[in-house]
Each structure stands twice: as C-alpha cells, then as structure tokens.
Picture 1 (tube, helix red, strand yellow):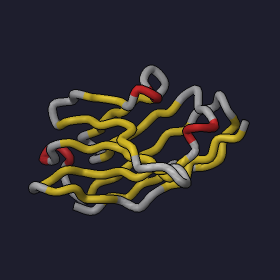
Picture 2 (cartoon, one colour):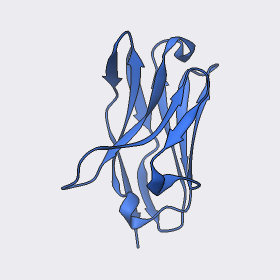
Picture 3 (cartoon, helix red, strand yellow):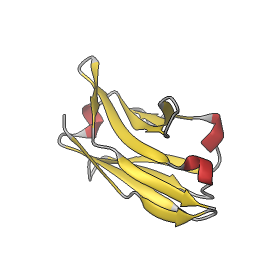
Picture 4 (cartoon, one colour):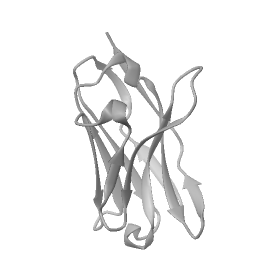
Length: 114
C-alpha cells in the first residue's frame, strides 16, 4: 500500500493544523493506521493510531488536543491537531499496518512557533 501525506506547515502556538494520509487501497482492509513524529535529536514516537474497528489511542502528550479519524469513502486517515505547542514541532509520518508489516508515507513538517 502506498501512502501520501499532506497538510503540514507553519502555525503559531495555539493554532490548528490538519494532516491527511491518503492510501492507495481501501483502508477498510488495513488493520491499523496512524501517525508517528520525530523531532530533531529525539526518538520517533507514536502520536495516534486508529484500528479498522475505529478504536483509537494517543500519546499522552497529545490527548484531548489531537483527534485521529478515518474516512473509508476517501481512503484517508486524518489527524486534526488543535492547541498546538512548540513542542509539537516535528516531522510527522503516516503509516499503515498491512499484510504483516508497516508501510510508510513520506514525512510532512509541522512547525509551531511560540
């Protein structure tokens, strides 16, 4: 499965951004999808994940600010990011767990200025 991420950019602290990850096949057949991020000098961390059943989990640092959703009609997974903080600055990458392994899209830069 191929993934195309979009929606990154520069925003002031307190602002919002929406990331989208478009899949090349029906996401209803993909076990789970989500977003990781990696900031300079830090380890990659899971930001949010959504299963084929619609179950979600989030990193503690983004709970109640970020919302992950899936649009089966458009074959996309979206990440709505509100109340952004400078520490959210990172490269965000979407993934899909399909046929026993992770598939990755290209990263998109999110920069939050203070």
